[in-house]
Length: 263
Image (cartoon, rainbow, N blue to C red; front, side):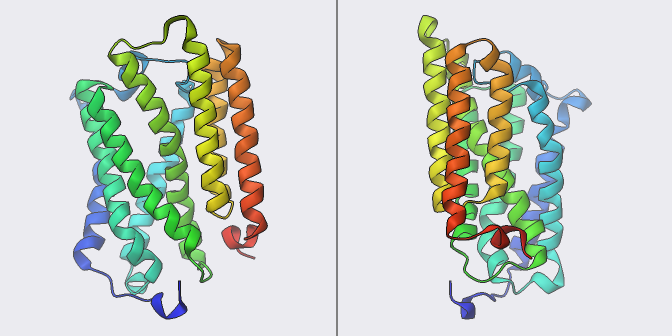
């Protein structure tokens, strides 16, 4: 990315779309509290698999939602209207937030059926686009960009990477595909696949430590749940964690921690 390409006038409609979508994802998730739809937690428990994370892991949505709101406000500030970095991630960010809202709305009414998997895959594709912008961005991140854009959106990308894999497994169970006696082995292979995907993302993403930390959080929650019920899953989560750490270390060799944390 050339320095001359780092300042682009923002589209006011797109700025507003980011704000609306960020708020909408929180509103839709709160509908069961008003008696509309079933809580996502109960829908998830109805199709719990060996790779469904322990319940405490989902508390991460609090910081994730807070981070998306912080980003939505930051990108709307007058001083950020010409930021080239923000100009490139506003559209996929709005798409990701809208995807979160649609996923919550659909899941609360219909459970983890096939369209929940389709929605979360499309949402993840938006976050992957943002992740790639961060990885390829050559100018130094400003303090605001680092903490109010890179941090929250990298964290969301990591969580959605893990959540997409879990969602697909839950969707299969929703339709009665549980693997039978080989379910622990299949689950272990799915976790390993997730670890490989995260490792490659980190190598290509300059070792993004924020992505690595959240993916490790997801793996620890899978270990705390399915890993305690099936030894293959426990082993797979350990191997996947090592892959994530290795991917981060390799990626950071070309970037360094200063790229991500400043200093």
